[in-house]
Length: 369
Image 1 (tube, rainbow, N blue to C red):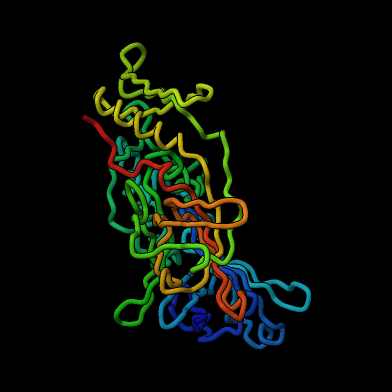
Image 2: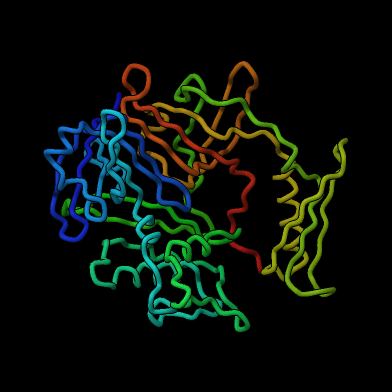
């Protein structure tokens, strides 16, 4: 059964409800890993003309609600004519930082950072953005901590005012490397019916391995592309490096003969100090690289096996695809979603999930022994 959807807007600074129920059509929205996610929809010109104050970019916040739960929230960035409709475009909370700069330097004295926790720096970036006049979006960043490090005594993490760095770019840099924290945007009602705008921070990963939901052909998968089998990421030999410099660098090689050409991949783990730990990581990495076959996306429907809203960005889920080309089963990680209310067969909601192989990632805490 399709969910009952409602779209409404709120003033970004005062919290005033601008419109309780926008008559949006052709809606598509969703969240993503390490990004803001997006919303698009259309409105009739006569509605926009009669309610011009409800969708002003830089003022209006837009929410998607279904069955009393908030499914998405963000800032309206564009309302423009398209054919005989007005197209509305919005993006999640973190998109706000793309329009903000560090004009004081080092986040107004919070930096520079030496061996700083990227999670704390991300919180400081948001605190700096929201302490400026008319800058408080009311976004709360999770108190997550990590063992990742930003900045060294020789090269501190700094933000120079004369370079006018974009705050969104600073966050992107902090989550761009392997082993960095991860984030997504989240919106929910609080107990007093007010809205909580939240940045979910995860370390060593965002999301969880889910055994309570799954996606299977013939059950809740409507369609899926052919399974991709590529040798680009395949390796039967892992060359792992650990801590140290030059000839003192920790070094391990794990290789198997599997009837094919020797294909190598390098695994750099500068925080791993022990040869045993480095060897274990090399074995695990080699096993992951020997698994080929990937399902990059699936279209699913609302179903008790995985109702809309039951998953979180970053979750690992069991996926089983059977079609005329192949049968495939494995753990996949949800990295993005696209929801189109009422756009499926029979008026069902159409949901497309973007996936990555879950067993190609190492989610454990960094080994230092």
